[in-house]
Length: 294
Image (cartoon, rainbow, N blue to C red):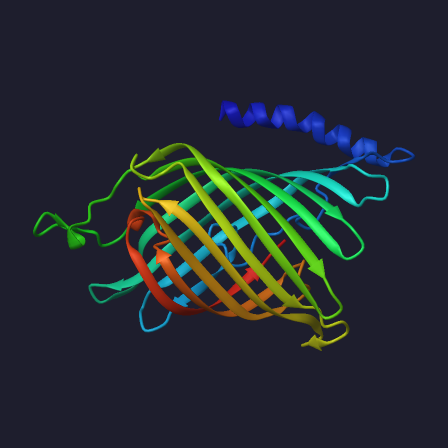
């Protein structure tokens, strides 16, 4: 409670001064709560804030996502507003839902993240260069149906582990905008200052692409829409480095850089996204939807 009050006492004069500066003639390079996310979450990266559900085909397993990200303050670097720097916060979690012992929608495992980000974007005539640094805390937990009270044993012989990770992640992206489509490539790495179990390597990499259509005046249900293809590939050491790939394709209803609904088909192959199962390999198709709220 004392820490929360201290944060409020520190933020209150900062936000008040930012608001006052924006009202002055000529304005200020600082903007409080600037609006849409400057560097939006990468579509096929599963460790991003989102709200939605993915159904694994041929199984009762669901991945449930709940979370949000917010840019809190913006600094405009160039007078023509083509270069911007922002800082924000991120809180999100995803859970594995299964059917166990005749019960549906049992929450098997949960991964939770919280932290913040600093992002940079530079615009040119038909391209966008972006950088995003995130500092996050991750913890993973078992929830329902893992311990058998009658036998005193753990399900499948897998006991819970104190999985924890404090890490920084830096990703750079380059987006080329053409007449009817947009193509983006991104790559980066993360480094953990704390990780348990200790056999997990502190260094990992991430690479991906996103392609989506820009349909001009075309609409669906009175709103713009985009067809998209996105792929995300990561290398994580457990301790040997193993690749994990997630491919998604579908349609987004709404502006690509704004709020909307994504409907997609996906194929996942690699290490489980649920870190209580961090060393288990999976491969499966899925269908899902995501509400983009930013």
